[in-house]
Length: 192
Image (cartoon, rainbow, N blue to C red; front, side):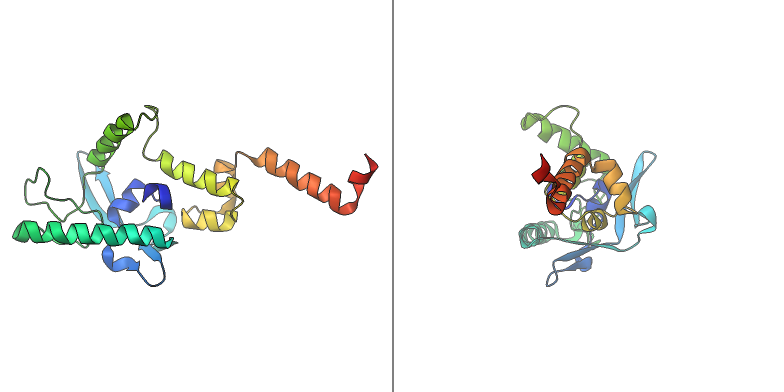
């Protein structure tokens, strides 16, 4: 989900099944899991004043979500009464279950710890954080020539200008391409 959507860790952990529009291919991000001291909790999304943000995803992402739903339904059935349904897409499963928390939110720090283990297994650089998937998604979309307004909206930045200033590293290349195109349209390239 991080790679395909560019969501923040807190947003992924707060995704709810009831906020997925299967026909439209959209996910409403109305909830996040946030850390508070040595604990964490589920709360309404308020990042950048953007409550109930909607992102649009490809059918392949929807297929991953369908697989996740099937996997979670099997886990719910296996655990029975130990599962407390909170409607979370990436709910805590029954692994090392304690205090009857299956079905509730996952501990964000434990998710990051699992990422660090996977990162080592994949032989990625030690400084590659889980949040860097978001950075990669935005940068790759912009470098592929995607509309900055749409890129900015899908990662819930407050403005396309912020997105371009923060992630538009290839500005020089884009500016050179634009300059060459403009010169070609007005015929100046023929003078060289």
